[in-house]
Amino acid sequence: MGLWSSRRPARYLVVGAWNMLFGLACFSLLYLAFGKTVGYVGILTVAQIIAVLQAHWAQRVFVWRSKGPYFREFGRFSAVYVAVYVANTLLLALSTDGFGFPVLPAQWVIGMSLIVPAYFAQRHWAFRADPLPLESSIGHAD
Image (cartoon, rainbow, N blue to C red; front, top):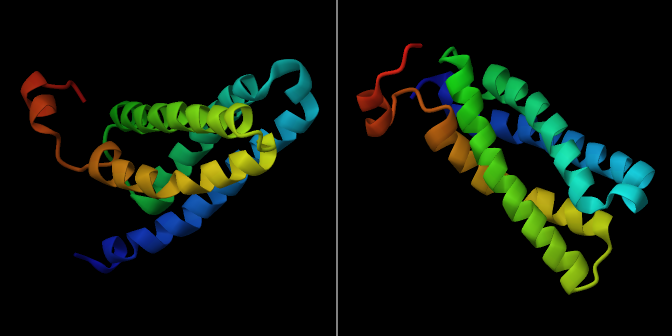
C-alpha cells in the first residue's frame, strides 16, 4: 500500500466531515426556510441531491484520486447514497414521528451515524479499481 492510499481513511474523514457539514447545513437551512410548507422528507430529498453532487466531486478528487470511468463511478456513488437516503428517511421518520424528537437534532445525529457505513460502501464498491465479476462479464464501453 502506497503512502497516498495509506492516508485514505484520514482524507475520507476530512472530506467526509466537510461533506457531512455541507449536507447537514444544506438540510438545516432549507428546513428552516421551507420546512413547514414542504416537510422534512421533501427537504431531505433536495438537500441530499445537492450534497451528493458536491460529495462525489470531493471524494473522487481528494479521497479516492480516481481516474476511473466517471459515469460508472457516479452511478455507484449515487446508488450508495440512495441507500443512505432511504435509511436516513426511515430513521428520521422513526425519530421524529415515532419518538417525538425535534427534526434538526435528529437529522444531525442520523447524518453523523451514516458516515462509516457510507465509507465502506464507497471504498469497496463505488470507487473500486477493478470491476466486480458481473461487471466484467457484461462488458462496458468505457
